[in-house]
Length: 407
Image 1 (spheres, rainbow, N blue to C red):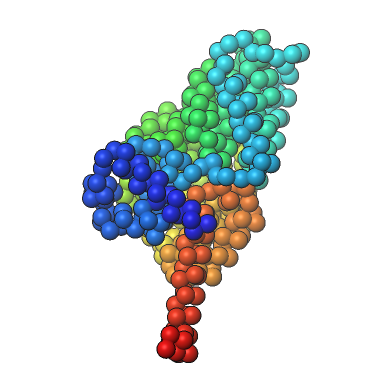
Image 2 (image 1 turned 90 degrees about the vertical axis):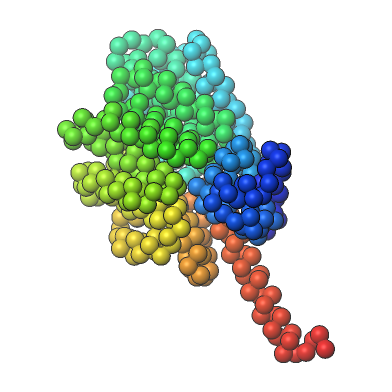
C-alpha cells in the first residue's frame, strides 16, 4: 500500500514532465512550495483531499483517475463490473436508435418499482450490483419510450434519466470516467423529454459533480445557481421534490465553494441547505423519484466534509460532536460510510491515529465496496500505516541506542 503513494507521485511527475513544467511552476499554480511538490512526487505527501487531487490533475491536464490508478487492480471476480459497465455504455451510445428489445415493455408504474431496487442497492453502496441491473432496465425503458405517447412516454424518459443517474453514481464510485461522462449527457437529454420540471435540475446536479474532476469550482457554483433558479418557484411553493433538489444543489455549491477556498460562501450555502432540510421536517430521509438523498442528517455530514475540504479538522470534529447520532443513523449506508471516512481523516489530521483507524474500520464495515474503492480512504489508510511504521522505527532506534547495539 505504501508503494501506491510512490506510484501516484511518479504519475504526477511523469505528467508534469510531459508538459515540460518545472516543479516550481506546479507549486505556484497549486499555492504550495516546491519542497511540497517534491515530497508529493516522492510519495511522502498524500493527496488527501478530493479537491486537492482534482486541482493537481487539472493543472497537469489529466483526469484524476490517471494519477491515482483507478479503477484499482482487483481480482477477476471483483472486475466483473466492467463487463456490465460496457453493456451500459452500449445502451447509452445508441440512445437515439430504435431499441433492441424482445417482447412488450412493462408500463412505467412497474418500471418505477424497479428503480426502488436500485435505491436499496445505492443505499447499501452496492455499486457493482447496480451496474448489473442497469443494462436491461435502460433497454426496456427506452423501448417503452419508443412505443408510448403522452404522459406514459414522458414518464419513460424520466425513468431513463434516473437510471442514468444511478449509472453516474456507480461510475464515480468505481472509477469509470467514460461511463460518468456519457451517463451525465444522457441524463440531461432524457430529462428534457421527461415532462418532469425538476429533472433537468437533477441532471445539472450531476454535471456539477463532474466539473469537480477538472477543478472548475467557479463553473460548478454558476451551474448550481442556474439549476437552483430553475426550481426556485416550486421551492417557494413548498413542492417536496423541488425542496430536495434545491437543497441538494446548495450542498453541491457548498462543496464547490470550499474547494475554491471561499469559506464564507461555503458556510452560507450550508445554512441555505439547513433551511431547506427544515422545510422537509425531521425523521427518516425520504428517497424521492429523483434519487436524491437529502435530509437534516445529510446536511450535517456535508458540513463536516466542507470543513475538511478547507483543512479545518477541529471544526469538523466540533460539528460532529454537535450532530445527533440518530440523524446519522437514518442515513443510508453509502452516506454513513462517507461520513465515517471523513471522520477518520479528521482524527488523523488531529493526531489521533487510534480514533482514525476506528472510524475507518466503521466505514469499511458499513460500506465495504465504497470505502475500498475510494481514493481518500486509501490515502488515509496509507498515512496511518506510514505513521505507525515511522513511530515504530523511532521506538526501535531509541531502544537500540539504550542497548548500545551500534557500539
